[in-house]
Length: 166
Image 1 (tube, one colour):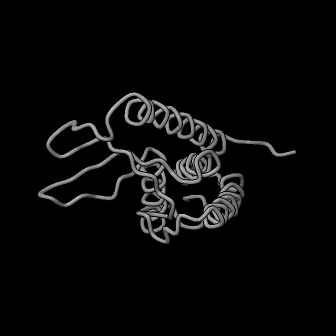
Image 2 (cartoon, rainbow, N blue to C red):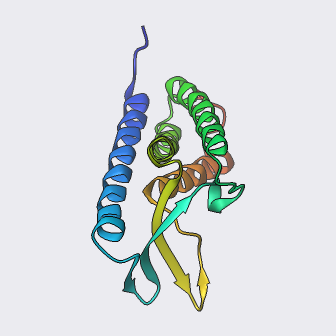
């Protein structure tokens, strides 16, 4: 039987929190933009709420729109998530566990969309001087922050897993 320490608990709490925040925000925006209202809401001069269905991977790459591709992306995300979950169970470092929790929660949130809709629902649209960042969602933001934290930790962190400072 697995015994979860503080690091694993932190990671699992973040997984659940990101999934809930992601799915609630998508439901709310979907209701506002697709079911009840316009296709876009201008919030500020640099930020809109929009409706974008991402059939590809990050930033719409490999967007074939086919249902087979959607299932391939689901299986790939689940395989990567399994590896990250094993890493989460094995880590004793809070920062790494938090980063993995963010990534896992985001990946699972987007997998839920692919299963429900065949695509990921993106709605956050930032832009400046006619340049638009690709639309994204809470899950995407969590994945990016988690990856950034892992990257920074790999450069400046304690080093090898389980290594204790003397």
